[in-house]
Image (cartoon, rainbow, N blue to C red):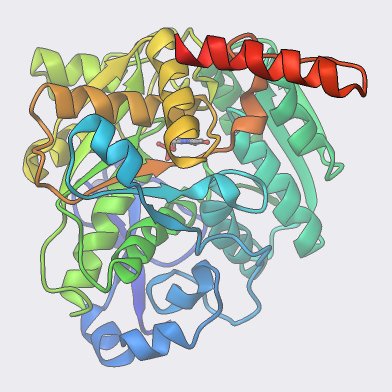
Length: 415
Ligand SMILES: *Cc1c(COP(=O)(O)O)cnc(C)c1O
Ligand SMILES: [Zn+2]
């Protein structure tokens, strides 16, 4: 892997070989994949990428895998929709929705897991595992099935039915832990220490996993005709997605695929779990853990691993951060559905509600080309909106009954 140099400590810069390491042997800082951008610049071109598959693997030159035998369930290359209805409603000139709710397991996690499972298999692991808030469990179970690996996935108890079924259908060992994500994560770290042939995608092979999120920058740039937008809104769980979208846009500039720099980056959280936004608003540089509550369960990480880096990048990019209530999240889900025909889960409702807030408070300027990342599918969090939509109008197969129902509905719509 001449393109890929090693795993570099994000704190002290110490470089280690491309193995299953995730903390620095010198300072215990987190590790990140380091590339040789001179080599990659000579390799990549828009034409070469366009000839690749319609999945994340068209960007293989910028991903940390060795061979061509990738674990691919078709994740990525999702629609980027110019969203004029929503733009008009909010008062923006150019708004795009990156609709990652239509991935094979219905969330953006297919990007990170496709890379992680490929690398896990290359490194000789037999069992694919994760600590999850739900979507990751679905994606790990699906990729393990495709890769011919065993899967053991961990979720917090009390998740939405759509996420439990969305993982269970692939027949993994599915373990619901009594507690929050942070308890699940602690247990999984202990298991990872004891079972050395298990790859926990977001723990012991996290540096590879994280790289998959860069493809959300690559695709947006390619779909915009090889340019970066002016402003992006990204939901925060661990903060890994946020920091890798930033890394992705920077890499494109470094290898000459785009000529402008990365966008202003704004972070979206739910007020039921807003440790990063709390720190941002208080002007702190470290994130104090919280105990999560509320409907945005995909984002319910009380102690986000990348929180510190998110704060730095918000500042560096000239972005901002906001947290929204459960009510605003539901309104965001409905607004996106009713204006653009996209049904997102609670995490997407967070993104849309924060987008709205940031336009209203002047953070996002009306003339900025803005991309909102919608990361998961509404059918997974039906509980959030089940009581917020009109039920079907039940009639017998009679023209008269139909006309009465239709006219009654026109009266309601006119109000
Ligand atoms: C996991 C997840 C996120 C957050 O990703 P992080 O990398 O943990 O910040 C956002 N949206 C959805 C739908 C998710 O499942
Ligand atoms: Zn270090």
